[in-house]
Image 1 (tube, helix red, strand yellow):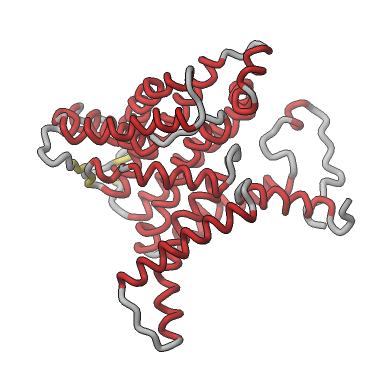
Image 2: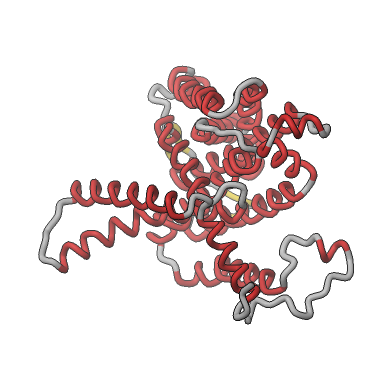
Length: 358
């Protein structure tokens, strides 16, 4: 009843092609942004920022980049952690070797480094696909681990590969508080999500989806597979590289190559699968599921055990958390293989016709 489109007439092409054509969607997005930018900073604690909000925002950006490659273009990638590492170490080298380098240009340059790295390891996609392409992109993960651990130039001659940054500033304002870091990451996420949404709605996005659905038919109708696949790798790697730079600079502060291991690549792929492939909203749902659920289980399991008078160790809680988390992932993929975004779209569709479903 509250989600009807009665009286909402589109009289121009511009009105018909807007990102949120339904008025209720526009109002909901504005309210959500108001809560994220105003209400959350007014109520959140320092722990809430550092443990939940900042990782959630950065991982949402990384999942968004992976979703462009995997969900929209259909190119399976297990090298997302490597692209994050290249973005982080690329931004670090620009930030350290050029005195006075502002933070935002350093992040963008780190993303460009990840773009070239992604195009390089995206070349096998012109000849192989499916699991073969996944193995080829997995080679990027192993290569980046070796490169940042053995070639000392990338880590500013650090023996262990561990590097750190400090005194971060944006337009002269220091990023020394958790709230400032959260607002900075959230602003970048909103900008990147808006650009990505417009990109997948345009001609490039339609080419990606045509390649995903049937690359032979796409080539027959005039779509260039090489251009479409490499552009997807480039855009995805740029977004993931910027997310990696944010993860290193803003969240960690000090990091080593192990911070971007193959486990990170699998987590990002799980975010896309659980959230919903081929959906911008799915990236946010998947990141929330992967980031927030383990923290919730870590707090919830000891409380439940205490109600029954059972005292469990920290190691037992950790093992139970992994077991429940894995079981929930399997159960969810069986119940709704198209992800949380599909459930969201089904709910919206039911609201549009309620109480007269047809």
